[in-house]
Length: 304
Image 1 (tube, rainbow, N blue to C red):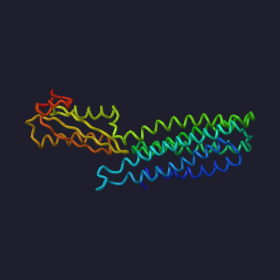
Image 2: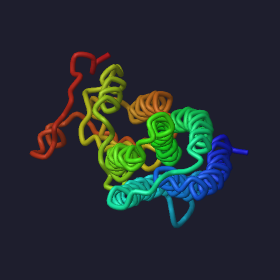
Image 3: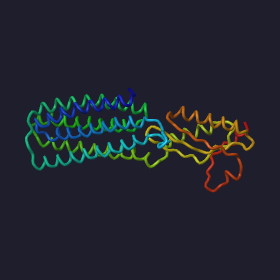
Image 4: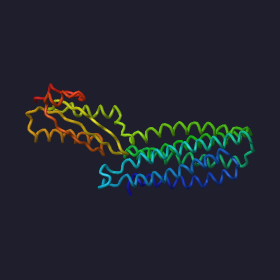
């Protein structure tokens, strides 16, 4: 089984168990924070299923209808997960405010402490695994799922401490207050993840540090004059790069092609899952003197 699919499957399985446990304990204790956690885990499960489906679909090779592949499916998945995280926060706020207005005592507090402790341990293990696999595969869908589970760790920690405090003090108002604090943390994660997932859908250029790496690769290449019209974007884990490479006008076509291929190979080696298109231009005033052209030059080595 593909490593990404395997990680997504683990997330679905762990969330299924936690949803059942939290719902049961939430009903038994009457705790709004535990029930809110159950709702959050329910959204986690839904998000995990979406991530599972998206990593399977995004891995399909390019076809006639999708010549650039299916990578953006992961971005759509990440955006949906961000919305689900935000929905969880809104639901928790609603339930907490209701509980503050109409407080009710909580029973079986110790049971709530136990299930929250279990949730924390499970989600720490699973989220760390998802973060690791998402970094290795550059998967925004798995990263979104990992963030989702990480928010669950913090929310479960808040509920755990709240239930423990109720056990020690008997102050039941702590329960909805903890739920409100948890909701604010979740909302922050949701807004951050929304931008990260949707930016590639708008074909935002690669980060400055990645563009600097590309610039370094090109400018360190002998026998070129420079380059211009660099365009970059990302779709899921895949990068798209195209630029115009300026070479001495007298350079043979075969040699210019070999230089371009060497540059492309270095870019793909530095950034796996990258598609590069290089347009070769001769060093002439007609080409580099155009008003819309900003040329990065390397004239000192162009004659090597």
